[in-house]
Length: 503
Image 1 (cartoon, rainbow, N blue to C red):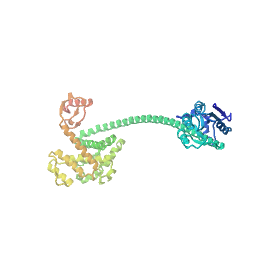
Image 2: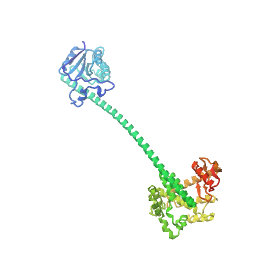
Image 3: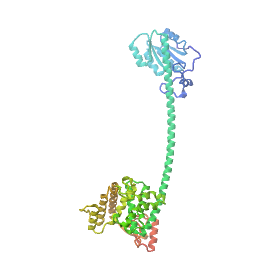
Image 4: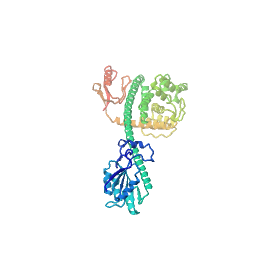
């Protein structure tokens, strides 16, 4: 029996295109009818389907044709498995459903379906058998992955219902695949758009970060320029009153070092340094004792004025907006950690960090200056401040003794007058610097004649004018401008002919 193609209706709907077995097509590879059908009624057939009927008995094939004579199906007829496989391969349109007999010569229905599913994996597979052989049915299910099995004789109406239901599921399955493919395609497009957007956002963010960095650097340059000008003006105070200038400079630098150890940012460190230079500006106009003695040793007539000096110091800075934070540090640098200080009796972390640091640095510097000359008097003063009667000294050198006892006093007042964390940082910073100084002492300091000075040389000791005014502090690095100024001062007789240089 030769293969045939029959159709019950020559005006059939648009055909359903085949879908590849491995990779579903994109929406552009499917007919418009499929896309339109997605919005249609899923319980009715929307397409012209091709059915493949396989049986070695012509009477069975004819009977199956009669079942589908009123349907809009195109039928392919084959009398063997080999012939059916050729039809599957050569058909221009996809086969939607295959009905095959199980018992056929050369190739059984189960064997045919095993090969057919490789050629047309989407096709629905019905097995037709004239006997209830469970073994054959199981083989067909396992090898050919059949969807239904039918027994002979069949009921035409029941068979037609089974076929229509299977084709409805077939259409729904392919349309779901199309939708999934559309979703995947849109996801790919969306992912591409998102990546492009992220790239643009990253580029813009990078540009903004660069601009922000440039602005930050510009602000830092302005801030440094302001601070450098401020330092230059302060050097005039050191020239006029070297003792006061030395004290304020020490407080300023110690405050900055402690702030750095506490990881304050560069701008905060600049503010802290300036606060150290100006923290006692409110004492101007009071007696010399107000600068050099502890609060309890100041004459009673001046104590009320002394308690106002932080407020006066802040007010003096108000005309300069850039010094607002500096003013805050100065205002609160006499507040005690337990709330017993002045002017507002703040306590703990209510006191700004910069003010707590300044308080510790200023008191430490002042205490270093107040110790008497003799070791015995130093012990007496320490006992009076701490209540300790037995004092074990770790050195017989006065310089080491006063540093050690000053640190002990600071620790004694820790938690009441001072923030314990900041006192600890003070001791760490001071001891680290002392260790560095010991190392420096082992380095050679050579007096170099001024005409032999070179850029990059490091000053080994403070350089002062012949009348005692500070010109350059130790550790200053010489540059072309400084060397020129030193030579002019030496030519005019204000300084000697040599400069101490650390080698």
